[in-house]
Length: 312
Image 1 (cartoon, helix red, strand yellow):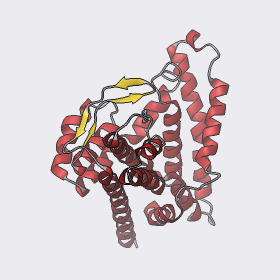
Image 2 (tube, rainbow, N blue to C red):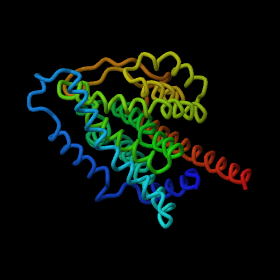
Image 3 (cartoon, helix red, strand yellow):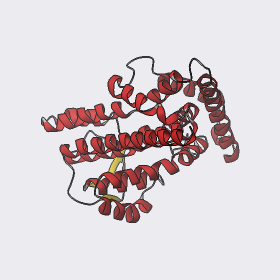
Image 4 (cartoon, rainbow, N blue to C red):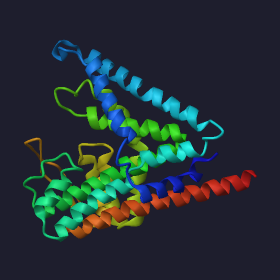
């Protein structure tokens, strides 16, 4: 059965239920990742050559990703579960409602003038230091997170579900979780996490650019395209660059700029064009992602119906 037919149902579940408050499979997977790291990470990494550290990381991600992907494939083929399993797995893979809820708390805190709460809650969804951010800095961080996670937690999961069905959604979401845990360029993960980071880059390459196109279609297309073309190549991430530059331009706000990460100041190129963002622009960013999500759902569902009619 065409995966696109299940997509609106899974998105409705996400909208109505949000993220499971307890027993989320990704939490259990995170514990499994930590256990795998304790098992394969060497006691003396400085004595390991680069190729062996990379091989350890590659073997670890294979052991972590292949079994659950195969299980999803097998379950989705069972006659009594061929509808339920894809819907449930996509619902668990997509984080649109959770992203919107986190962003809304930050938006409301800024609107109410509670900068301390806004700093605290934006720190839940970004990795930069937030304790000294002003209102514009909080709004900027929140919007950047919404735009980037719109690609990672929403559109990329939808893309791989449409391409490979339930196994694709599982493979992508777990790979993205691995990248979030191991894909750091620090002493511990620079080589060990190399395979996780590169595999996530590969899986995100097409979805990120389709996300950028989606932002253009639903926003200020000319500004978004100009920002994508001129600013994305300067960004440190090959996939986040197009997404965030196009999204900032489509919204007509200025993002990027310097930020402090783990106590170290990092200069980042500018993104977008227009005024400094406010709390109202956080809501606009969430609506941009949500409209794009339902656009994808509508187009894929219509295409599936049309293809089915042609082959009937």
